[in-house]
Length: 229
Ligand code: ADP
Ligand code: ADP
Image (cartoon, rainbow, N blue to C red; front, side, top):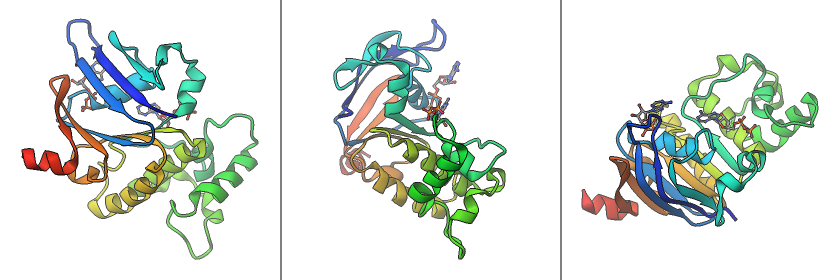
């Protein structure tokens, strides 16, 4: 479950300026597609279309053959987890920030769930364990820790489809490498779309597309694209 397709997708924020000019993507369930390309190519736009912040102007996006416009918004958003580049945290605890949006559970419950199920391994371990940190305020975290909170938030939702929108681009290379390792483990079994600006961070992807001029300019594995130069 989670076969994503873009079929001849066209979209522009302004009617006179098309950003995506007939985009075709095929992401088999459970596989990882990386999307690279110059700034402004429309990579984040593609993520916004999947989440239906905007609708396509022409063409369609399907999940398991169903047009996403025919899926209830709540089910669509439950099926897709997005980790953005810059995670903005609420001025509240780490636990609250991870559990934000999970309805129906008390704050204590979600904080306990988040601590037990998710934080261990994502927030740097302290001698006194992770429990103490769930109550810590999120705003003082480093960039890397904030991204770990964003990943934990997405994992709590356990979405079959994962979108990483430059999730590690703003981090220093060492922190990036650590988080990329974590992400690779998380991607297993999920349909994943990784938006990245460097080919070196998406070596593991099953398929890489280079977006340019609103279309797929190149398509292949990491090794194939390196050969193309
Ligand atoms: P990328 O993620 O590849 O850097 P984006 O998808 O963010 O590119 O943006 C693609 C183009 O759409 C850019 O030219 C950008 O300026 C424009 N754009 C992005 N968001 C909006 C918006 N909300 N309104 C108008 N133009 C936008
Ligand atoms: P849910 O409660 O179902 O998780 P949310 O509306 O809280 O849905 O958002 C889901 C994810 O999408 C969150 O991780 C959030 O940070 C991310 N997100 C929301 N808006 C944007 C956006 N404009 N660009 C990228 N990611 C976003």
